[in-house]
Length: 233
Image (tube, rainbow, N blue to C red; front, side, top):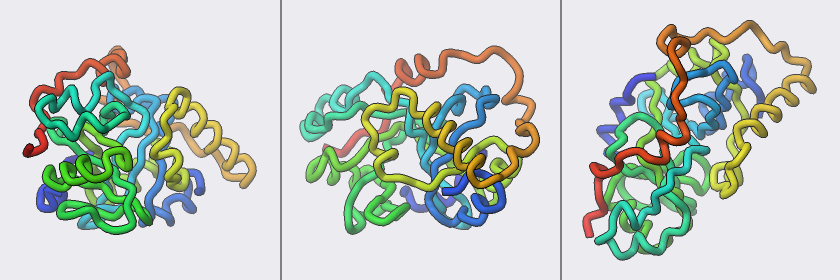
């Protein structure tokens, strides 16, 4: 995975196999293969959608931190209205706040429509407006995940991700305990029912296979968020 350069300009249900790859122009859920040992992605469920220039952008759905939005921005009074914790969205732009917002129209500049009535927002001023007007119709993330054109397809081809259709209920699910296990079993069940082959063992980059695996949940929950871009007021 590499940084999705186009996002800087913006400031902004089938399992894997040919059928899943044919749906790469739609939003999807990505379920990490059990052998995926990278600290950022081990036992994760991601939401991913097409981005600019043929790439994809997404966030990790099952990495809540122990921080509230108001604890990150104590001088920003509207942040106190947000009930859910801040989530760790991914390793790209860890110092930036990103939001998934449920709205029937774009909430403002720097918003990318990723599903019907769902927008991913990158611009700080627009996120601030969401916090002030409808704080709990959104989920807030520190960082995100980006793929250049063809990269996600290559990772799916190599068996790193299992693919399911995007589901708004899963994206905003509050109880994420066991989400990865549940989605993994769902993808396996769909494959079995469709008669699809499991395929060969996944092929991971060497750096993702070696070394001890840290406590990824603890790392996400205790990360240093002191440099996150703050809402303007």
